[in-house]
Length: 126
Image (tube, rainbow, N blue to C red; front, side):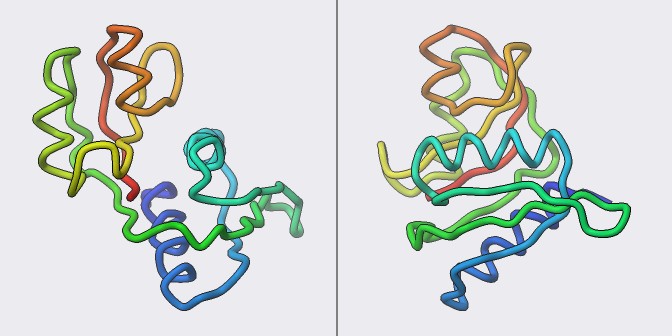
């Protein structure tokens, strides 16, 4: 099971249906990706709560997501390769973000390029 893919697909589905809230399973990876999305205003807020013995996350939608997808397989990206993957996954320059897992944590492609570090592609949002 890919928890990140399930969470992002559920967010994309609820956003398309016009819902204002969505509930997904909670992991450190999902929370990190949601933090990046919140920072770039693709979601309004999220909060973690416990339901029985499982942790869940309630997400408040911002109605700004046109498309959201998971990148599989998780390609390794060098510092000079970001432009190639931006052209592949994002429809226009400065219109969306790639979410990248780096040794310094989860961040966007622009932040990783500015810090001159590579990583693995996780998802894209626009």
